[in-house]
Length: 436
Image 1 (tube, rainbow, N blue to C red):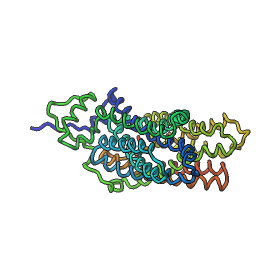
Image 2: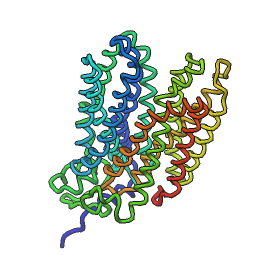
Image 3: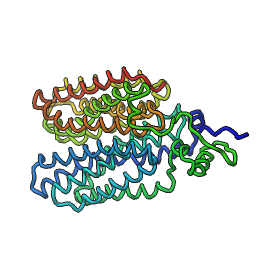
Image 4: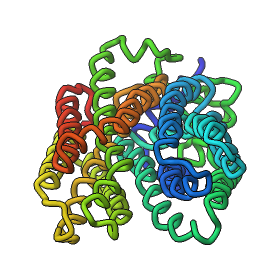
């Protein structure tokens, strides 16, 4: 009589979180850090490009928009590809794409070439996130999944903070071309170093009999005891997934609400990324304009780590709703601050740290929620589709920011940010499959 197949999904969900699995999550997180670095790199270098090429800032608007559009397309395509061809495979392909294209920017001399390369870079960056987070989710037990995904995605604001701290002082030393050389070489080196040691998702391997030897070795390293010739299955997988599965079998409501939450939250985040320095500098506080983005992002690192830990202990519904409510309150507070040369810098930076921390924490935990909502067969597709739809909000923030500032100055700007977070809050209240 044949012995029953080893249920990989059950073993992972109910197993221990070993030191090796923690190391794998750290490796997955390292692949995501370049999304945040890249988001800040272009902003830091545009003033130098304007001077060298004799162009106004408006000439670079299509560059930023095409980069975000590339992320949107890349997230959707690479999420589906990850579910079909393997998260690890697609992750390293996307890292290579954005590394090579970032390196190529160092040789450009026209805005059109820059825009083309930034679009392709966006394809790679957008594709890395859903596959990196899906890997992190599928390495760990179910009760650690939200924390693992949050620890991975928190590297986006961490990377943005590091880029702001490092790129600004390096720019006068190595020039803008040197920054893009460094920004391209680093992910290529990291990809080369991680490729031999970062394994494929065990849940994905369970669906491919020809890779069961690889799966057995990985499970043993994770601490599971196997028979010499084990057969494998993943009872929770349900076979190969399709994009249509995001809207069938009771997933349609959560899919639509997750898309709305990603969209509105990324509007708020990219209002900060794209326009916060201009708002602060326009108020006569140019000396702290770069610091404002730094604390906005650094607050997000702390908030996301705390949010991931709280969700692991108490579930996601009420903690995420509370984070959204707190972020909206922080935005209202910012709208009431009289921004001028006499504004208390400490009060301003504290309010930005509070609001930015909660908004970024909310975005990080949204990835954890998406990783929980979808089963393994469509996990990368689900995360990628939600992130891709959210990028539309990032693109629109480039137009919404100037509109709000023109309509009512900084109060309207921060109220728009707060209204976006309230939309996220409302969407979260309707999601059914919150982390328990």
